[in-house]
Each structure stands twice: as structure tokens, then as C-alpha cells.
Length: 431
Image (cartoon, rainbow, N blue to C red; front, side, top):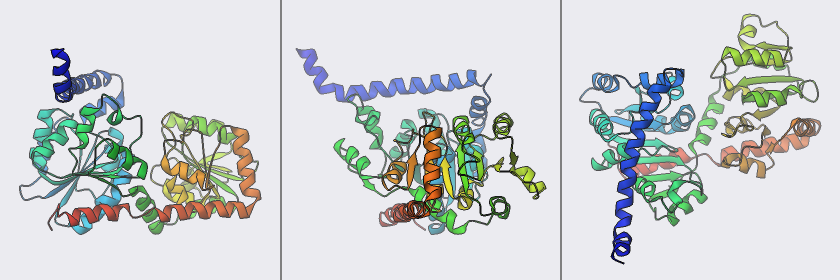
């Protein structure tokens, strides 16, 4: 019986420590695995290469008098979510520099082009020694993690130094480890944040039921981001010329499954199709060329604007958020992959009815757009053709769906302001 009493009293303290021990082992094994994978995988090689000399480079670039705000993003999508917060902090605290870190090579590559960031770097592997060294060099006055990424050693090192850390635009689902019987270690990580800003009431309730009270609903900063892009978007005259006022479907962030689906639709209800694929490597672009023989690439259109085609393939990065403006309807790719659909808000902000595949349930904004009849999920070519015809043949219904989409985005802006208000009210930074 004694062992049961011992387990009952000490397990809540021992289990997190044991999990932390194995967590560190896992991180080291992960890094070793990445090194091996880098021999045959370019992305893994870049992950490892990008972290070489990280500390020396940062130490050389950060002056003793620099005052830093550190913002961490997992990848490019989180950077888009973080941009409104970064830019608001920079306006309010112009004497501070912004350091943006990334976990993934794809995010890092996009971050290098982001002019509002003063410093861009990779996040070092999450070991105690790396975290101590990184924070000792950066000495941030405020840290913001975007949406997720719960790096135990970095967060512990920040808490030890009493450096405030905010988690912004977070969303929590029932299946996450925080809410499992074995989740004490993971819940412990959440206590290392000064405040957690969540997207919705469901996330807030899950946290509070798990004993996490330092949290509030702020909304999703992506709404602020897409609203700003739409307000300041430059014209795309070549795109306007290509559509020529014809019924046009703009398909963004597509994958091969999406493109197979779309191939059956061109020439029926939709007269023009613009495809902005998620991957623009030459192999994928050649697949699209074969699937749509009557297509041209945007780079060819730039060279000769007199070229005529019914399908335009965007072979660059950076135009998508403005492309939706020129469509009659929008299709969001990724809905036939396990990872799910891409950013629906970039289309909705322009007041466009939205279509996507069946894998959308874990995206709150997609579920809410469907509930508002501003978006519709399709499972096959017949379903897509039917919905396209329905919206294009009934202008009143199309207009109603588009207005609902645009109104939804505008009604959900303001998350950035709530984060900034918290920083100011709690004096987390001084000018």
C-alpha cells in the first residue's frame, strides 16, 4: 500500500520531470535524424545548414544597446498571421528592433523578404543549452509566439529570466495532449506564457477547464492581415486584361488533386480559370501544362500581353492575395489533403463566394463561412460543377454569398488591437 500512497503523492511531480527528460532525448534524436535525412533530402539539409553559425551570427549583428522584441513563427503561414502584430509593435515602439525566428526553411526563406523585420533567424533546436545561449545573446524585452509551437526549454529559459511571453492567435482542440490524462507536462508548458490570446470561445473554455486562467479571446490576427492587404492592394492590369470581365474562377494554393478536379470545369460554367499552385517547381508546372493544354503561364503573359488562353497559371509567389479580387468565384486548394485547406480569408475579404474540398473541418473560419452560406465544400467534379453553375446562373445568390463572406471578415477584425492593448496596459514594454 505504501507504494500506492507514494505514487499518488509524488506522481504529479515526477511524471512531468520524466517526460521532460525524454523530451530532451527526443529533441536530440530529432536533430540527429535531420542530419541523416539531409544527405538525401534538400529541405532537411537546409534545416540543418541554416542553424550552423547561428549564435555567432546573431552575436555579431546585435549591438549591446539594441532593444529587441522577439517574434517566433513556425513557418510562412504563421508569419502572415504575425505580421499585423509585428507592424503594430513596431509603430508603437519604434526604438525596438524586431527579431523574427522560424522553425522551417520555407518560413525562413519567406521571412528574408519581409522588410519590417530587423533580424531573421532560425530557432535553434530546443535544448536547455541552446535556449540559454540564444536568449543570452538576444536579451528580448518581449517575446511573442504565433498560434502554436510550445518549445519547453526556450519558454523555461524566458520564464526564469522573467521575460514576458505571449501566445497570439492560438487555437486549442480536444485531441491535443494538453487535455489528455497524461498531459501534465504539456499543461505545464502553457503556464510559461504570460498570457494566451485564443481565437474562439471553444479554445478559451478548454483552457479554463484544464486550469489555465491567464487567457482571453482576442480573435485571429489573420483577419487584420487580409483586411489590410485588400485595403492597400496594388492593381494587376494584366490579370484584369486576361479575365476581360468573363466569369472567372480563381483557384489558389492548389495541389494535383485540386487541379484534376478543376480540369473538368473549364469550358462549362466558367469561361476563365486562374490557377496559383501551392508548389511552383517546374515539375508541377509541367503537370499543370499537360492537364490544361489551353493555358499560359503568367511569366509568358508578362513578356507578351497579346497571348490568349482560357487558363492562366501563376508561376510566381506573392500575387495570390490580390488575384482573388479579379475572380467571380474562388476555389481554395488543399481540401483533398490530410493537412487541409489553405487560407480562405484571402478570398473572402474580397467578397467572393468560396469553394474548397472536404478536408476543412479543423479550420474555424471555413466552418463559419459554410454556416453563413458564403462557402461550400465539394467532394467531386459533379459537386463542383453543380455549385459553380448554381452561383453563376443565379446572380442574386452569388451576390448574397459574396456579401456574407466580406462581412464575415470585417466583423472579425481587431485581434491585433487587443494584443497591443494588453502590452500597453501591463507595461510589458517601455518606449
